[in-house]
Image (cartoon, rainbow, N blue to C red; front, side):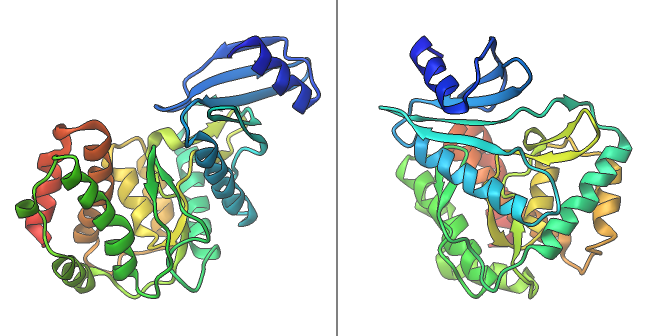
Length: 287
């Protein structure tokens, strides 16, 4: 962070930043811990042309989760453009290593988000991002239509356009709709975190669960649970607590695979061919 930007942030916050240190904060942005006399802030900076749009979408997602009053998120203090790029400043949440009791609380609170924050249609008022990739949230009445047209098809098209998949390796839209319709139950649209891997939650030093870096929309609650299983990092008490509120209804394993397909396609498009075998296995198995 250069001196001019630091002074600009100080002016907007109305505080003097006494110490500034780089911290881990995601794959695509610079991140800093800013320490003032009595306060600490978390700042993300990105110089990409789309950065301010990405940060505005992140802010909207955090605010949507906060409005549910079910689980904590950091409070956004600043979301500002730069001449090229943008920055986001939030309250700093001091994390600790989760205990089984913390995971249990996270499971109950995530279930509360999914149960209490609902909508009439699948989607969200504005589009956002999954990682650095655009994520369309156009509304649909049917979950299978939304999932195929707004999730699977855009990622499949991107993979074809960039040579990561060929047309012979993917099903038709009709085949995707048919496969999903056979396995997807009738569900009420729930507000999802949308990218719930182990790097996108934290437990505060006081033991409170927080969600961070969301990619929100209204969808089937099992999508968030599928993402928690893709890369691990959630304790068994998390799943026990969650299932008290959402017991199994059948075909969870199949839907888990299909919901993980979206995230695997995202990783294929972002990080390359090491994810291709996982993608094609699921496509061949269900479509």
